[in-house]
Amino acid sequence: MEHLATLIDQWLDPIALGIVLGGTLLATLLRCGFAQARLAITKVCALVRPAFDPARAKADLAKQIAAIRTQGILRAEPARSGDEDLDHLVDTLATRRSLEGLQADHERQRLQRTEAAQTAVDVLAHAAELAPVLGLAGTLVALGTMPGGSEASAAGDVGMTGAIAMAVVTTLYGIAAANFLFGPLAAAIQRRSAREERDRQAVLEWLETAVRRTMPQAPARPVAVSGLRKAS
Image (cartoon, rainbow, N blue to C red; front, side, top):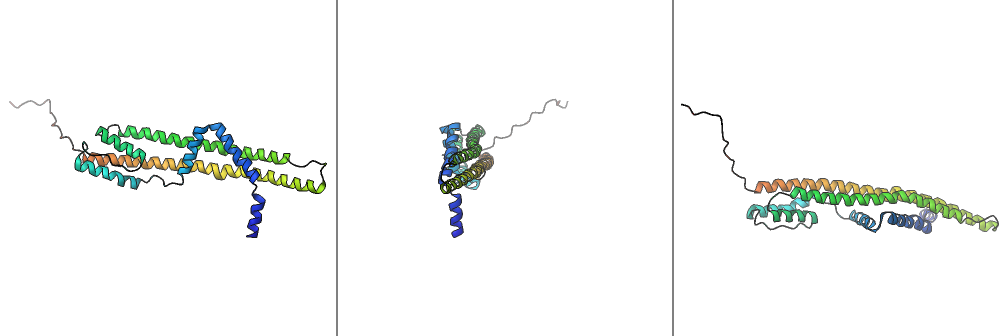
């Protein structure tokens, strides 16, 4: 525990941390704007919540399939699943009373989700790019606080040691923030987005197949055969 406390005391510098993280967040906000920064924060917070569950979505949509099977597609009321996009698709199915436009609505929702995820990834990529720059800025600030040659020897040595330590720590914080914080967060959002779109597409295909099975099939029309002469 003593070694751990010493290590923390040596490498934890609140001033350097404030310069690197605070400067990175401010620079990213100024570069990307409030709307994109807020969207990125929303996507980062969503990472701690459960991901889209296709099995649960199918179980919720099975209620809609059962209602269509028993009441018919014209009288079946929309069943709620708690997922906003899925509920919208069910509303579309209940309003139009057919599968027409279901794929188009899903594609529109997919574009909105992927664009939002890509925006968050871009914001975090900017932060990962700016973090080492702010680490360098912190290094310059630390070197600028080094005492001059006219100061007392003992005090000058202590001040110089602290300035060098802060310069090293700020550089380390910048590199660590880029590669162990902002970069991994961007990759996590991208992976979750790709997995969610794949699962939602599978759920939509399952829903379309299940609804078609419950809808009455039109009787096949007789095929007219032409070119045959009656036997004389």
